[in-house]
Length: 171
Image 1 (tube, helix red, strand yellow):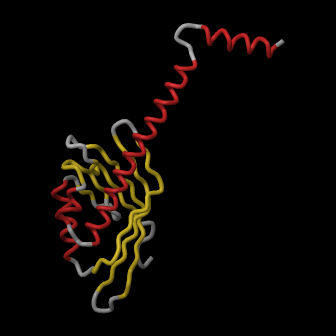
Image 2 (image 1 turned 135 degrees about the vertical axis):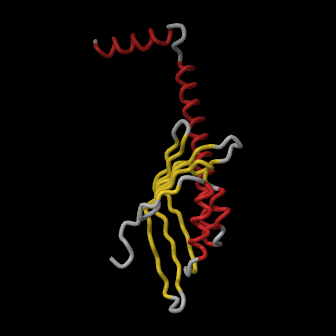
Image 3 (image 1 turned 45 degrees about the vertical axis):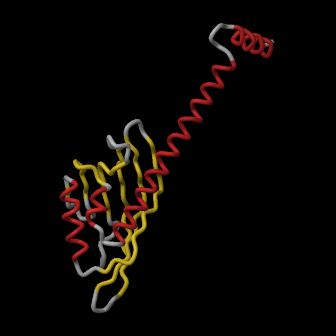
């Protein structure tokens, strides 16, 4: 009896105006389009993270800063707060002028989540470098979080960022 009631109810829903199988297909279609759009956004963010890697490896402070929005907010690994693209550039210029010889930079996203107006990227950033005169290789792994936002020009830029060194070197 219960099965007949369910079947009758399903048949009734199919005959109700505005409730058809086409509307459920449209929902699936919309869902697929949204997933496709989110995948495209994720690919753009990943491409920008790769650019950040390359700019960092080449010690290009102006290019690193160019991936950040003009009114960005960054919390560095030891609590330093940076609140503009100009300060991002200054910070990285100082870092690149230090005695570090950077040999590698890698961003490995563990999760990228697309929201209405922002994209959240969480992952692990590995930086390798040496210091003269011993040229010993140092490798630091940071947890990072980027909040990407699309600019008026359509490019995704880092609006907020945070790095966290899980363990201070030497401790």
